[in-house]
Amino acid sequence: MPKRAARQGDHNRQGALVSTTTQPFSAVGDDGFQADGGLFGRARQPRNPISHAQIEIVLSRSVAAVAVVFALQALPVMLEQLGSRKASAAVPIAIVLALVILIFVTATLIRQGIRTAAGAVSAVYLAALFVWPLVMIDPTVVLESKPWLWYLCGVATSCAAIALPFAWAIVYTVVTPVTFGLVRVLPSGGEAENLLAALDTFYAMLLGGTALIIIYVLRQATTRVDTAQSNALAKYAVAVRHHATEVERVEVDSIVHDSVLATLLSAAGVRNAKGAELAAAMARSAIIRLQAASGERNLDDVTVTVSQLTARIRSAATATGVFTVTDLGVEGLTLPEHAAEALYSASVQAMINSVQHAGPAQSRSVTVGGDDQSGCTICISDTGRGFDVSSVASARLGLRVSIHDRVAAAGGVAVLRTSLGQGTTITLTWPRPDDASGDQSAEAKGSLSGPGAGNR
Image (cartoon, rainbow, N blue to C red; front, top):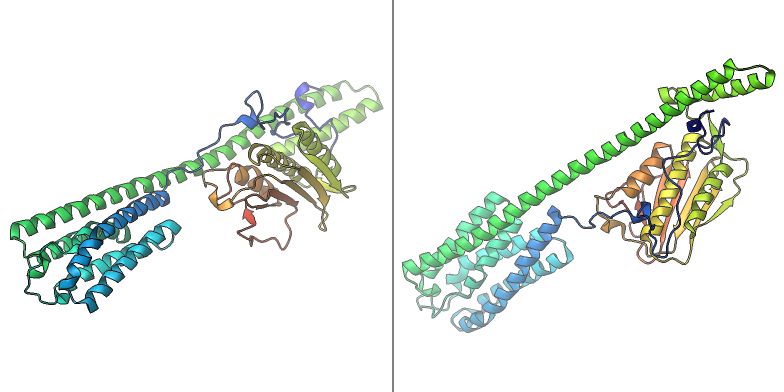
């Protein structure tokens, strides 16, 4: 028989477990990386790529920091001007404005309700401008300096740029400085000359317009980045699957080619009953491979024992030097060949992820057992550092593609349980339980198919 037909695990026996493209582990050093820079030394993708959400946080926190600085600058001026204003109205207005600024700063820190808080700052500031002349003790007395609201004009327009749609933000950026300019020419606003009031108006408008343009441009740019990234990831995932399919097709076609030739040559040289039996066995193997190549094969017609699957997993785990394998009542259990291949490849990938990312761990184990559906359950666990599923970037594909999708395509299910400092456990189950659902505890469990499932 040609060399290519002697595939690992086949040995010309119907029902043998064929090898996958996942290579066995080589020796692992203390640092968890291969010396030859192979699978364990693969470069990692950036953990936090630029995104629209991140730029929103940066912009809002920048505005919040500026708001705090200018609010502190306005405080002594406000206290100085308090004697010429009605305390019963002026003090509550100042308190409300300070409160909404504090809420906005807090919202930027906890990343919740940022736009609502920014909108509240803009609304309260504009209302304070409109009622400014009404809360003076004597509206005819000329104020000695600019109203203290001047220091927060840029903050209000910047908050409007964050909270409002672009068109409404433009309107606010024009209306608010104009309103301040009108107040500025009144005695309650310092009775400034028209030219000085106009300069103040245009300065505030220019400052607000600059902030609006910067925010709008950054938002548009990061939106395009997110869109391009999503498209690229989608195309990459499709390309990976197509490439894997094509590689497997070429491999199977070449094996089928060799098997058919070997069968024909064997049949041509038959001289006795033993030779005929061998030729018949080779013919059956070739027919199965031809059916697989043409897509007409019933995937359940070739089975392997769970003991064979356990032996392959144990071989891969032994090569790592860090995983121990335990089998629990697997005698007599069998699986379809395609399901066994998927479970083996997913188990190897889970062990790779543990060695690469879990850090030092007191124990790493693989447990293979049966279930009440005449199927198989494989549990790969470690006591390493664990991770926060929600913090894993959506750009990462390892868990989703190499484990979840592979097992799901074979009719099984993969469940991830992890949290920071509590280790990681991946449970592979075939067939998929009838009551399997996606309801997982967000704190302790993670779906391998969600946006946080990445190349970990």
